[in-house]
Length: 79
Figure 1 (cartoon, helix red, strand yellow):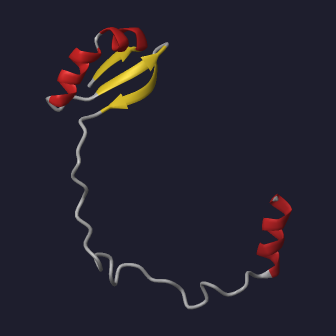
Figure 2 (cartoon, one colour):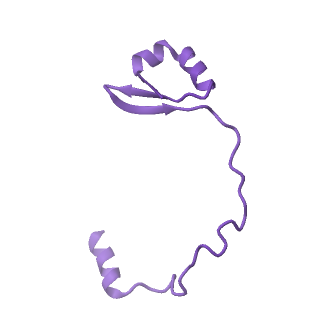
Figure 3 (tube, helix red, strand yellow):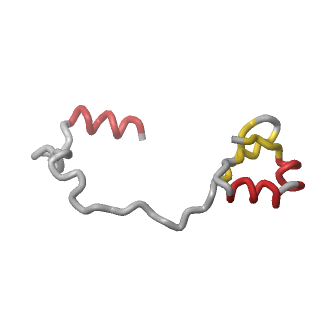
């Protein structure tokens, strides 16, 4: 993964795009602080499979019950 400063990125954008097209990643930094990561564009989205997590997630029976007073007070005190 190449790291380039903003000036170099502006000056060499076409070259960087060629590298990205070949699968490389490029990080653009400002003052040695990474600011952005350029990666190859992929129009493909992951295939979603309905029911994939069936049986792996459990919701408690009292999920939507009112909160106990002490917990509710703690939330309201933080607001």
